[in-house]
Image (cartoon, rainbow over all chains, first blue to last red; front, top):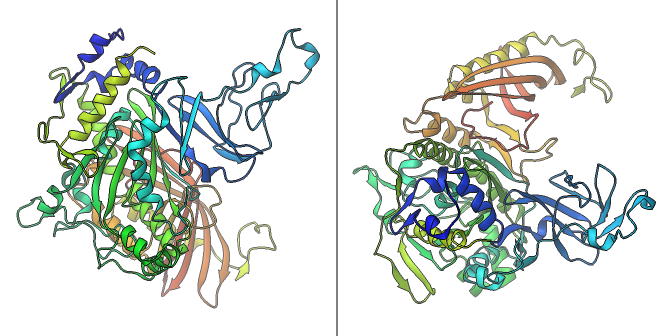
Length: 433
Length: 173
């Protein structure tokens, strides 16, 4: 039983291993909801999801229902989706448009900035009832970078700039690919759930070690994965076919950490000289036309593969998408994946991205499904008491500074990124809220 | 195409068309899936055939929105090869399925061109690794007559819970 004392929490994480209870203990999970999801900067949504006044989306911050709205003055608000009267969830749809948010129970009505505007039968209110004090609760702190909206449910803590600063380049890496320099998360979503702890998904997004084995079913007899991007003639070589082992080119891939639990993997060439299709060629032409040939050349250079913005969001640069991780219970997690539309890119290029994301990351995809199987089996295996420790020691001591990137570098098949996540995890978890 | 009726669907579907051959075709297709004969299932599709499972109700297009499945023949081939791969973890052990197809109706017909739109209700029960679950919805097959049988130009399955969060799905519905 975890009492939440710092010294007891600290015992769960050692330099190259973590105790299985971080994945399986409901008490640890409750503390995570309070100490991590109750105060970390969490990704909420993208401003393109609420383009017009009165637009809203609903989501969860940790387990708490939340709404992101676009108010009449154009401002974006992050509100808790709970009526201040008797507690009902006010907005039930995942997305919609309404100039007012009306609770279904007694009709309390809020403006899109959260202000309480109408209470039916107002003469029944207590004499000292102050409508101004009964607006929807707001996330105490909200920050935005290039349309990506984050919120913290704590009044104080590291600033948005401190938290997101090291990852701005990773967001730029994706946004700059849009000929108009803007993204739109308006192409629907994929949603999947699994019987496993949320950190299994968080750890997996930067895990290049598992690919040749976990995704063996997507690799042909020549060790090559299926073509998964518009214009690609084939996918990455992940296995040396003759030796039946991980390909050297795959083993050379790098991973990086830059504090706060964040990390990323590289590199994925956007234009390797062989990638070609009418849609991709037209995209390259439009990009050069809009941003200039020199800048387009920069953008088409190798880009980041996967970026994790700890604790609940990742950006994928290969099959471009934004992934949001929502813990439901210690052994149950929901994930939402938003395809990204590159604003200004040809429709056929955006369709190429959407079409191939269907087969890489939908609940019925070729790639994500084998990961889900691994997560479910990990959760089952971690019920074993025989060994309490989970090994995350690959590459321990092999990390090296990358001064150009102001980051620490390791091999993508190592576990440096996971250790960095647990360093951040401990930072949150040791400190009582 | 002759529509079933002006606007509202005519009871019984397009007049003068016996639905029996269509029902038998759908039963055959369902059997191929239940028997995991995925290659034979794929061969039912025309070369430009598509298999589509939208991710939202009444989804207008697969081109600007995410879908659970939207496979052309190339992607279908990759999917089938993966289903046959010995190390497909999410099918170890494999799913067992039982499809039930009913309420079949020929909704549109162009007899001259040999093209038909056939609606039916599908229920698929899937069992795998100690878990059983149910998928259900309305499916629409765009069929082209070929000899004594049909090829599928498009199969679209609108699941009643298409916009829910799913646990991993490996086999087509």
